[in-house]
Length: 165
Image (cartoon, rainbow, N blue to C red; front, side, top):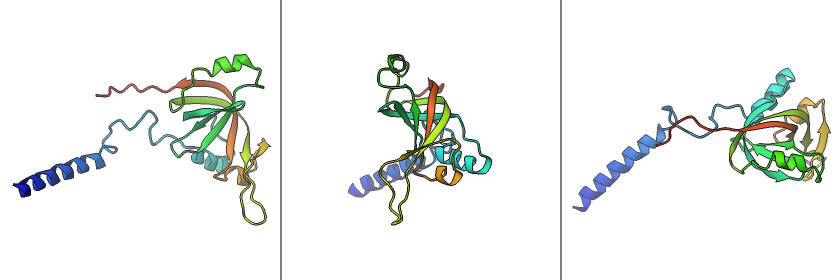
């Protein structure tokens, strides 16, 4: 009896495991932002090759930090969008009040600079970033630790048209 239960349980687990392996490759729903969507590192390598950085992204909202709203991609890399001039800019606060952490958005902005974490002579990375304005130096900007800074123009929540059941 125990042998039958063990064999049937192992067959069930094997079949379930086999189905879960192929679930992403067979066109099933994998999330609101597809895995083939351009990532921030792809944009940085594109900047190194052609000198242009994409202005529209599909990203997840992380939260507010000072005068910036922070978005991240599927790799966890961040882009900061400046949404207000100073802490007294109440119109800008109203503009971003509908952002919810973890939700995906299509975000458009004007590229204004980047944060660069410098490396000292001992090879240690600085804990405080240096804000840099455009034009960007390709070697600095392509660094994985550099964070692009945009001026927020528009955001639209990404909603799926798929029926989930």
